Image (tube, rainbow over all chains, first blue to last red; front, side, top):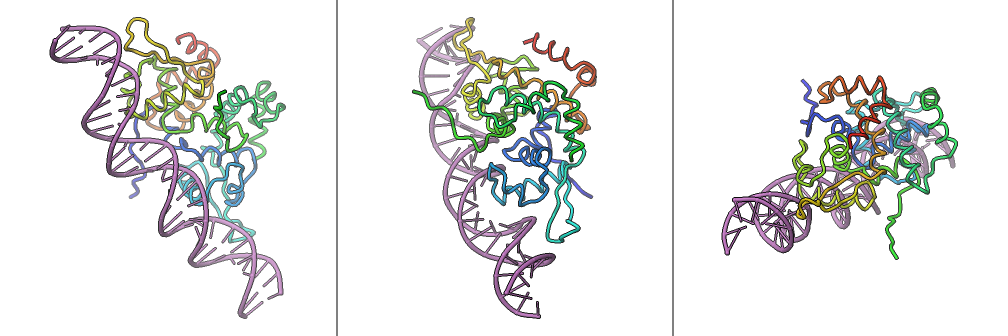
Length: 135
Length: 135
DNA sequence: AAATCCACTTGCATAATGCAAGTGGATTTA
DNA sequence: TAAATCCACTTGCATTATGCAAGTGGATTT
């Protein structure tokens, strides 16, 4: 008998999303998985934003509990764990792309390549397909 | 001489967005402005999620500083302040709609009306136009 | 003039995040 | 095969963010 469900603050969909990834780090981990091809703990640890080890461990655990990512042992090396996105995690891609578009519009110093923004404006669907294919 | 800019953790667009609204409350305030027609402090205070007064005040202040909302005195009553979305705030709508679509897919008990989801899948652009027109 | 409304602020408790160091098992190196 | 290193964490403690309850002061209503 598992009792996993915390009581939600409301039945609002924005709130549902916020309760899952509405913290300072979760979406950056999802980003690393979706756009940067990262899969190992040490890779997430080396991201530009410098997450600390305890926070990374706790976020990875929560994301797994919430079903956004999976964790498996690397068959080449039993000491390594491989993290991957579930479908539920992959399905955050459209939202993240809108977030990127918004930031590109309002951040003068955005790191997003112009070519990426062009693709996003030009043919979002095929960009989504390409990114998913690359996973 | 104003020095407003905090140093960013990185130049990543996801991080840019997170540093602006990556907390537990900001997007719920934006939601109230975008979808629920709220404009007064007391209205935000009465949302289902029950934000506390000090957090609401500090979030409204930060959202104003970040240029997502504006604050004005109600011409009918000098004791009341009217909050409204700026263009920068309104431009979060597409992202929020993707968030709603994701939550509707994965939350069995989502509060989103089926008709809204249908419109979202069916003709996102006209839904966006309608919502903006209603502001 | 007194009561009420409104948008907050203040003070204090709890929870989340941040930093540095440590742990233990698996793998690599000598 | 013993020692060093790698890897994915955990632990302890400091700082910051959030949560709760009460209070404040100006504007409006009674």
